[in-house]
Image (tube, rainbow, N blue to C red; front, side, top):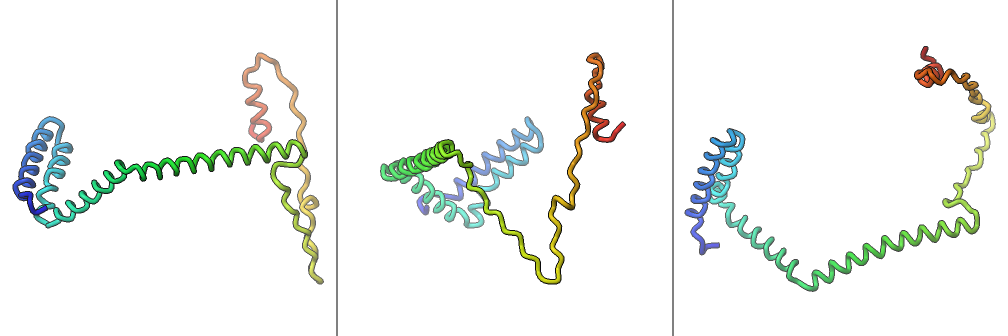
Length: 168
């Protein structure tokens, strides 16, 4: 870190960036030029605020981690084992589902176990028992289908739908 002359390097990168941002301003407009100027000011700002040593340490740590990850055979063996474990989980789930489906076809049992029905609650003394749902709600009645109209009437289906909905 101390072996590099950071002030001239940061000033040079900022200067080149400002020249490029001026060219972008002329060719692509104000938005592109201002964005490039903002990016080009960051190296000099990092030097002046003292953030450059921190950024350097983070960068070298990331590069060391990535190179250790990419060039390490033990890491690649671990990645391969992870992939194999995922494949085995997926295959076992598929086989488990097929096994249940085959057993259900053989026995004629439903695929999912039937839910236990809760016993009706006993009414407390002095409280009227609620009426069953079927007694409180009338059964829906089905309207007879309207007679078919002539085949040349293109709007007959639409008219039928509107009549069923109560729209005339």
